[in-house]
Image (cartoon, rainbow, N blue to C red; front, top):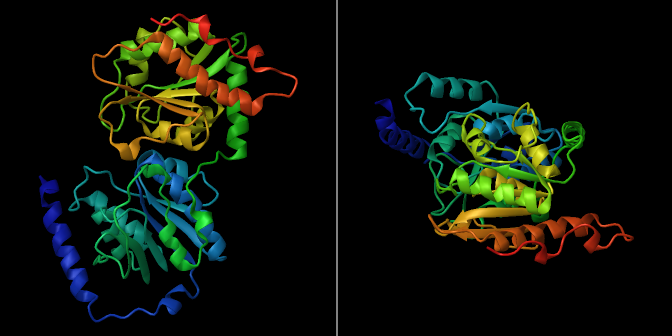
Length: 381
C-alpha cells in the first residue's frame, strides 16, 4: 500500500529541493577544497561495478586524502565490501521497499552519519530515489548527468544524452570534469590476487581425479526473464562433457533461486561441487573457467569483462544494450522459444571460444592440435 505513494513523495521532495536551490550559489573550487569523503550513489546490479570500481580508484588518486564510500544493494554491496578501492559500503533498499518505510529512513540515517563532501550519482539520470538520497546526504557538491541537463537533487548537472550501445562498457567519463583522465575511467574488472589464488587451490582440490577443461554454467534467468529450458541447458552441458571432455561447474549470482538444482536434476553428468562463501567466490571461480556458458545474466557480463571465453544463450528479442560485441572470446547463440539447437553448431561455437583461451596460454612447443579436437569429431545433428 505504502509503495503507491512513492511517485507523489518523490515529486514533492524534488519540488521542495528545486525551490530551495534557486537562490543558492556554488563555488566549484571551494567545494573541491579539502575533499575527504565521497559517496557513489548507487549500485544495484553487478554490471554497475564494471565502471564504478575504476571510477573509485581514479577518485582516490585524484583526491589523495579521500575515502570513497558506495551506496549499494544486493550482490553489488557484497562485492564492494571486499574491494580495496572502497572504504565503506552503505546498504541501500531494494526496489520493493516504500519510501515511507522504516527501512528507507534507516538508510538515510546511516548516510547522514557521514559528512560527505562529494556525492556522485552513477546512473544516467533515471534513478530518482538514489539521487534524492544524495541530496539528503548533505554533500556540498552533488554531481551527475541528466539527459535534460537539470535535476533538482543535484547542484552540478552535466547534460548528456541517454547512452546507446552495450551498457556494461559505458564509463563514468563525465568524472573527467573533476580533472580525471578519461582513460582511467574505462570499464573493466579484475579479481583480487588473493581471491584468484584461493579459487584455483579449491578447484584443484575438488577436481582431483577429474581430467578435462572447466565449463562454468550460469543457469539463472536473463535480463529479459527468459532462458532455454532447464532440460535444454542440461542437454547442451552433457554434450560438451561427452564430446569434449568438459568438467561442468554451476555458478550463479542468485544463490537463493533453485535454478541450479533444477538444472542439476536434468543433467546426466555430475557437476563439480564448489562451496562458496558468497558472490566474491563465484566471481573468482568464473575467472578460472576455460569457457563460461550462460544466458543474459549479470555473471555473463562480468565473465566477458574479465576476458573469460564466453558463450551466451540469448533470446532473439534481447535488448541490444545487453548484447556484447561478438569476438573470438565471446559468441552469442540466438534462439527462439521452441527452436531446436544444432548440436554440431553449438559444439563448434564452444570450440571456437575455447580455442581463444588455448591460444592465450599456448607454449611455443605445443601445437593447437595437441589441445583441441578437430571440428569433425562431432557430427552435426
